[in-house]
Image (cartoon, rainbow, N blue to C red; front, side):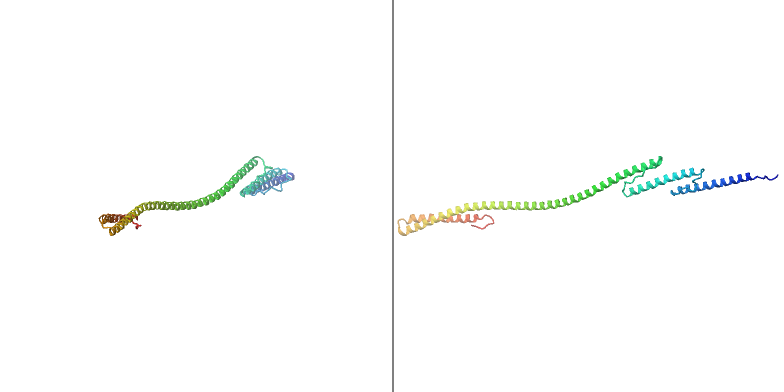
Amino acid sequence: MGAITLDTDQASAVADGTDARAHTANRIADITSICERAARGDLEARITGMYGDPAWEPLALAINRMLDIADSFVREAAAAMEHCSHDEFHRPILLRGLKGAYRQSAAVINHAGLKMKESSDQIRYIAHLATETASNVTTVAAACEELTGSTSEISTQAEGSAKLTQEAVSVARKATEAVGELNTAAKKVDKIVTLITTIAEAVGRINDGADAISHSASQQVQATSEITRSINEVSQNTSLISKRIGSVGGPGKGGV
């Protein structure tokens, strides 16, 4: 079988087709590399070298636009969350340029940031209340301790006052008893004085009888009888005085 011989135009066409396939493969390889870098988290990767190529420029622009939006969203979300981690809630995700799922997700994150701010404010308020409560508890504890000390002191003073009252009552009772004993003794002394007066009168009559005996013999018998009666009276009254003098002091006390 004979060999096929191509003319110049056919050879040129074959060469152009080969170059086109190679060019396409290179473009696909470049785009694949950029997409793989983005998948690994390198959102700064962009497709370059395709502008001015009507076949590949629209695809490159679309992929780069997608990467721009993803990069912007990630940066805004990271910045907002960074501020939230420091209790700073004034940095929400900017919604400018975000559409569709990106915009919806940004709104959800911003709403979560507001909830975090409310929770942070509540935590601060509770912490403030806890500090005030702790201070009030300390003050109340100190007041209770002071009140306990005052109560103990008052109790001690009350016990002392009760003891003094009991002693005063005891002393008053003893004084009343002493006054009663003195009153009884005074009455006995009055009786003793009366007996002494009676004895003195009897002694006086004895003296008078003795004088009568010495001056008149006719009155001797009568005077002797009077003297005897007076002596007996003196003797009885003297014995009675001794008994009453012994009873004046009372049990356990000396005589008057």
